[in-house]
Amino acid sequence: MNTKITIAIDGFSSTGKSTIAKQLAKKLGYIYVDTGAMYRTVALFAMQNNLIGLDFINQDELIKQLINIKISFVFNADLGFAEVYLNDANVERKIRSLEVSNFVSKVATISKVREKLVSEQQEMGLNKGIVMDGRDIGTVVFPKAELKIFMTASADTRAKRRFDELIAKGDNVSYDEIYNNVVDRDQMDTTRKDSPLVKAEDAIEIDNSNLSREEQFELILKLVKEKI
Ligand code: DC
Image (cartoon, rainbow, N blue to C red; front, side, top):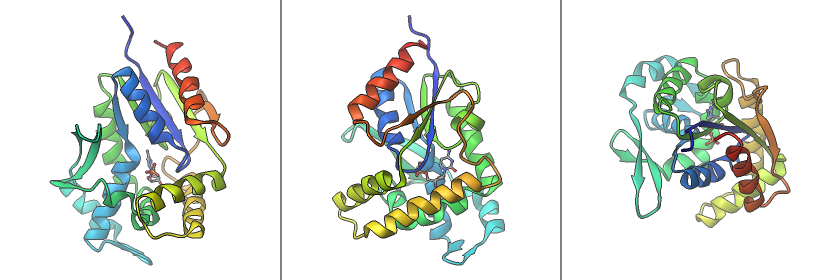
């Protein structure tokens, strides 16, 4: 019988981490957790409660309100994946907007926010059999994960992918604003004091700028098979 392992997938924004992690979890019958969605949900809450804006963030009040934020993943059988809920509201679509993308890295710098989300993530992984993607999974959330992947791709490749995705959804965005958002988030994610985005020493780096989805999946599946 295969042993269940913990798989940590970290990397820059829009490297396709979620897509590959989702596919992998489905193939292995593992739980999939998109931790970026959790940070995005906190950012959305802050926006809805006027705790963040273009030139301000009310950190103290957001920290006080953290106990009122319940994030859950609810499986949608029609879609074949879990959608994110903020308290009782399905926020799956809202948290993917460019507006949330513009605020989320700021929210993710707050240590109390990270503490709450990291502890919820660790609880979800207690029984292993989990694929989790984010920025600090291999370094902070599951430093003992049996398999750690660090995904990279050029900023231009990532911005093009994100742009195509948003346009396909009917969002009215320009390539330049997407590119700037990708570069700004890289900067904020890698330089924040608490849990900056870094490759764990024992993570395997995959640059997927020139890899098809299938090639990438096969490569990762091979790495998984070496561990189980
Ligand atoms: O993966 P994503 O683009 O949806 O993540 C949104 C933001 O959340 C990203 O800019 C950084 C932050 N994040 C984080 O700090 N730690 C994580 N484990 C996941 C995401």
